[in-house]
Amino acid sequence: MADEKRKRILSGIQPTGTPTLGNYIGAVRNWALLQSDYDCLYMVADLHSLTVRQNPAELRRRTRELSALLLAVGIDPKEHVLFVQSHVPAHTQLSWVLACNTQFGELSRMTQFKDKSAKHPDNVNGGLFTYPVLMAADILIYNADLVPVGQDQTQHLEIARDIAGRFNNIYGDTFTLPEGYVPASGAKIMSLAEPAKKMSKSDTNVNSFILMTDDKDTIIRKCKRAVTDSDGCVRFDREQKPGVSNLMTIYGTFTGKSMDEIAAEFEGKGYGDFKLAVAEVTADALTPVQAEYGRILADKTYVDAVLKSGAERAAHLADRTVSKVYRKVGLLQLDK
Image 1 (tube, rainbow, N blue to C red):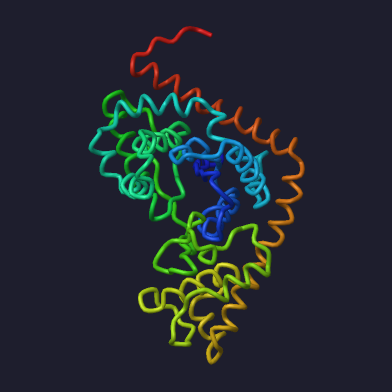
Image 2: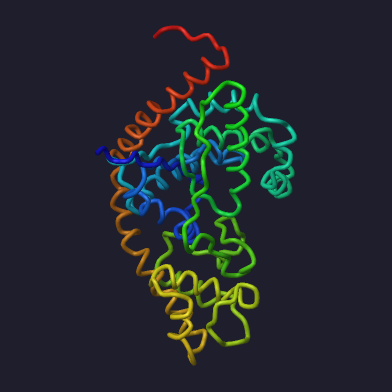
């Protein structure tokens, strides 16, 4: 009996800076773990980063660095596909067709457009408004079954499903309707300085986040400065003890211990001991990744070869979808 076809996962990350511990725990770490059960396509989403003005040289550098970091985490470019979004032109080709099947009102209701417009009032551009359509194209062009999503991305997945459903109803069965995939634990790591907010590399307070490339001394310093409370008790309670709960989530991710086990381990101990323990397990987890990252990044030829191969493999799938969509909407295509 033939093996059941594995489901396909598509996920992407923008090269707008070094990923944080939140990116690692909530997304990147899980990307490596998903490879044994799914067919995976992982994308460096450089086109999406253009909604905010970028330094061109830095964007190119960060794109290669992020690719090297994803390889260092354990993504296997032979078994799965790692590519840069702009290296596959079919994404933008499909995006235009999907934009013509998306309503203005749908896009105007997107909360991320409102949030980013408020943050960058001097650059409320059209790309920022149509960003969800390109994201839908990223997903639908590969007929992805699953998309790893955080809580702030669920609205984008919903509109992708709406666009796909509308297109299928008008032109016949074309796109797979993607489902969201949320890891069982560690899906959202909060700011160390303001635990009501998600950890973000764009935060102006450098003590609010840990970068994947931070050394052990830096990690210890940032954890020591993490906001907790005056209770002095290590106990999980997101509402009443958000800072402590956030640190417990980090500790539990790297040790495999439950919240009850962590509370028992640090019963009667102060926050100083607890914060140091969190810092040490975090540094121990990141150190081998950092070493591998340094080794891979030093081999520019290898990184670029991986991305070239990934783009070719991704384009093979994407071009077929675009050709099918063009035919269905009535665009004349010539034999090659």
